Structures are given as C-alpha cells and as structure tokens.
Length: 268
Image 1 (cartoon, rainbow, N blue to C red):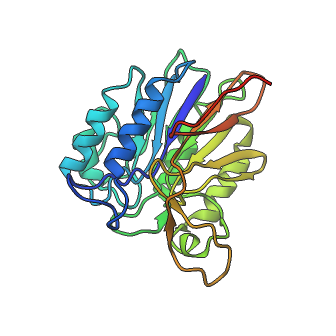
Image 2: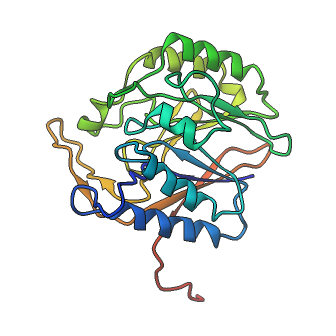
C-alpha cells in the first residue's frame, strides 16, 4: 500500500496571499498536479489538517475542486485553522455526528492491508490541541478492530510529542498527551504508524516503537530554530509531499518528495 500525505495547506480566500507572501492556492494546485503524475499511483491521500486559513466555504470549495482532479481517494482531518461544521458540509461522507463534534472516523477498506484512523486533535477556535477522555475512549475502541496482521495507521494534526520548536510546542497537545501516549504504548503491536502535521517540518519520533512522522507543508515551512525563546516565523523552503509505503511483515517506510521540478535524473 502506498499512502501520500500532505498537510498544512492553509488555503486562503480567492485573491489573497498568506501573510502577504504565500500563494497557497497555487501551491496546492502544483501539489495536486504532482500527485496526479506519480507512478506508482498512491492508493490514498491523507491530509493532516489546516486545510484552510479562515475556514470559509469558498476555501473548502477550492480544496474539494482540486481533490476532484485525482483518481484516488482523499481523506482529511481538521487542524486548528479549520472548522468542524464547515468541514462536514464540504466532506459530507466522512465524519458523522453533530456539527461541533470531533471530526474523527475510520477508513476500513477491505482491499487495504491497513485500517486508517482519522483522529481529530483540535480544540475549536484555539491553536493548541487536546485528546479528551471521549476521544481516547473512541480511539481505544477503534483500535480493537486493528490487529498485528492488519494494523492501524493514525493520521492527526497535532504531533503527540514535543518537537523542540518552542512556539509550536506551546500550541501542541496540551491536554491528554500523557494518556494518548500510554494508549499508543498499550496497543503498539497493532499500530503501523502515526502521521501528523501542524509544525510545517519533516520531524521523526516514536512512541514504544511506533513510528511518528510530521510531514512538511505543501506551501510554506516553519523556521527551524531550537532556541527556547525562538519567535514564530516561516520560510519559503520548497513545498513537499510525504509518501509512506507499507508492506506486510515490514514497517512503514517514509519518503519526502519535492513538489517543484528539478534537473535529473542522470545516469551514473
């Protein structure tokens, strides 16, 4: 199984630039064009939050229009810039429940060797995240449907660990982090990996042997600054796509692909 992941699209309103500098609509269009040309073709695209900048109907409409250009399915979870109710209207066939309820769901495709779990880590109208008791209970119940032979792949927005980038850690998972980490430890034999976003950088970690990958943004990146008093800034480093390959009896293997074209390949 080949899984493509993009994150932190931050789609703005038509005619705007993010922070006056980043054309996130053009960035997503280029990303979709790249995804459409991949060979082998991914089985699925997972988008791990911050789909939009201000959660308007128009921003989500631009996203769904772009996703319609792909001939493989795409699934989304919210980030702190998203709105659950508006997402439910844009993606009516994904998460069920009340408009304000967590946007969490499972993708149980019998043709796939993985059970995919979209976990909502957001707190409405706040930048930080949380895994509340209800979501922990839901995740624990959902993981009962995974097995070591057909493990779960969790995708979520906020990373379940400290990254060392202080301003992003300050708006990470501030409630339920220890309980979530313990749940992962308790079910580590039936979890293939955890895919996240939020920090706009490639960052690797693990919990009890479960691999965690933070994917870079499809638009702009957060500055890598590990000083404790680092300000929150961004850079125009190249946008990227994460590709995750899963083979039974192995582990999740992740690659990072640049969206922009470059010279090569050349023969040695």
